[in-house]
Length: 392
Image 1 (cartoon, rainbow, N blue to C red):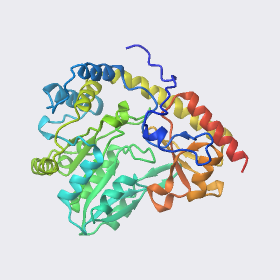
Image 2: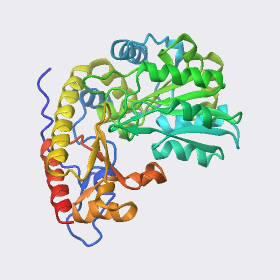
Image 3: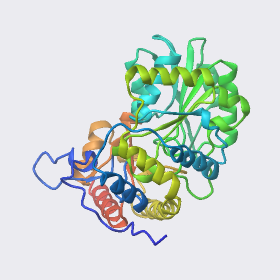
Image 4: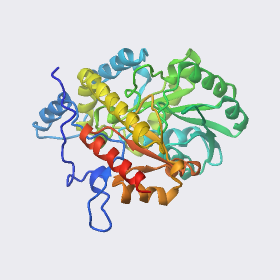
């Protein structure tokens, strides 16, 4: 395919963008550069746009079914990108997205009062699903050593009890950017099988993995793993399709898969958004070359970001991500935390980031930054941060 111009700046203001239009400067001044919500400031693949336009031209947008090509595109993607031979019968779907799928699995497989474990820091909606359904949240602290986070397997085993029924995994991990290795996942599966704990894995960032690292689905680490896992995917991060709200759920266990489908049937959320369906088929079926170019561009953005912080803003320590287009910033040496740190970035640096406190109380001295944007925007944001830090 032709070279994609990821440097092109596309004005997203006044498009009802959640990322660009939901925050306004309180003093009527210049709005901060939004680098918080995890969507990208790039056009989606041309194959996806063309497929949606072709379907829109038909003029009738009634209820839709998934054609054979839809299944084929997903299965081929799993095989060629993840080296996972998924059986078509394992596929289930949750049109609203991954978080509603997690909600359904929590309600199906646990009861109020049961314990559900998540790693800490944790993507806030995953923790909220546990708490809002009356389950007890068990936070499993990740260990930070040498600028890298790892699972504490000993702490995991110590914190589990007879009431722990589920572990919600994030792979690659949001916000730290860790891409869990096959060995780590195999040990995690072993512990969970021993304690009869079901694993629900949010793998929405599976396709955004950088050089030297390889994504491994938790359900693929062993034959037994598949029986004890549900692995959740969506093209929304990979191809910038968040507004189309689709997801695929891989559940090898036939009984759990049937119960999951019944749960969605009860809620009447089985059928896809017609344009989401078209986008899934087009992206998984044809947009692989576009993704390869995207990964190269994101990796160059990441290299720029890491160099800039290291050379010019050493007070902020970047946790280098192995995957995702998000970086976890350790800002504790600035002497600010919580709302003071958030206001510093928004009001002094003119950059809107995600506060670390949203990922757990321990992380109020951290911020999460999205670098999936044209390089000119990233460069401006980095310069703004540098100037604000020097003025402290």
